[in-house]
Image 1: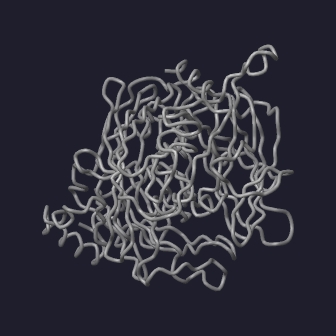
Image 2: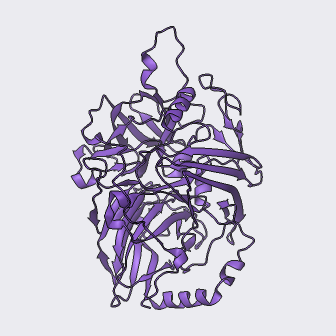
Image 3: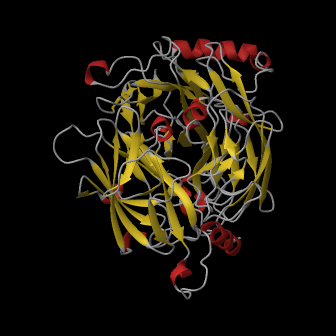
Length: 572
């Protein structure tokens, strides 16, 4: 086995521990492993006959530093399993909130007179009042309906002791790729996600889009963050004079912490010179990743196959995927990247995946360079339970959800901007008054199903922001008013907008929004640095059904909830 001395010692110690490694954590539902542990694959759950049915509990515990942890636990005790579904499948997820009631200021779900009454009462889906223990689930990146019991986060509240049933209908045109799930209760999302409550979703079939991945060993790697514990928690802003200081958040890989100041990396096992397909979720609440694979300090090329769940080049023409060669991969919080790597030869002494330093602005978080894991090579490679194989090609590429978007004409153009003050964070439509989000807000934008729009989103603050859109994806067109290269013209659901220096034009991105799909109703867009979202940097968009204006003026239009239910029924 070729690896560093530190990794050899860790590998030997953990091998000797065997099952005893896990027995110490038997009573802890939210297991966190020692620094330097071997990266293990999350449990894999697969749909059968078009359905994946799982029962989750939402649980909590406390680590040795006194920090509160959160986790989703499967009925067999496995934490945050990877959910594998196919386009057209149904995910039935029953969630029971076992987090004890906690003191904290509740938020009231006020009546929304234009919304249909649900079983929970006007304006709500589940409980009417949120508490510090509330939870729901956002199925991030999926193009699924924003209605009660599917991917609705504005009004869905599950309180302590309550059980809630999700029935998520994966569209038949859902691009095959990597998605993820996490809580999305406004005001406490940061604590839940930094506490560790997140997991991956894989929509199967990427091998039919890009045969390069067919048959490859694949690894699902989830990077999370948490408040730093060594040294004790300190929130340090990212001015230039502290770029090399302690990070604003520590990182982990599949629940193996990589904390400072030593930054002992996790260990990923693979065969010498082996090709693998790495599927990486940045499920960090605040940390931007800029990944680089290094062999003896030299950066290595990787072959990018998909970003944010959409295979490169798959939405135009034949539907066949392409790939991009990169020496580093930038992944904002909530972003996903899937790429092929070639493992180190037996001549490499030190192989690591690192995240490079990202300067997020004088008001931003500190993201220093640090390792994530060391690669340990051997003839055997990883344990069989920690590696699955991408299936062989089984058919033609699937239908294209975003077909023709690059040539579609936008009927509406809008400008939005990020800004903040000492108390709140804002995302505002230009011409409207900045205001922090509240769950009772009316929509800031109203549009119609079938439309295509171009949005320019500016950053008018001194720190980076990450624009995320629920329910749909968008096409990246330009940065700072300059058209991006063909290789960067990708379909995404999250994009980074750098900080404003205080002089000159505001940094911006221009994106093409695709409302041609089936999703109608109310959903949100926000900054996916979650303490910004919790601080108010979120707003609601309402997508009206296509025929909203075609009926007579005397007829009563459907509510967004009614219309969404009808659309969901049509696509099942």
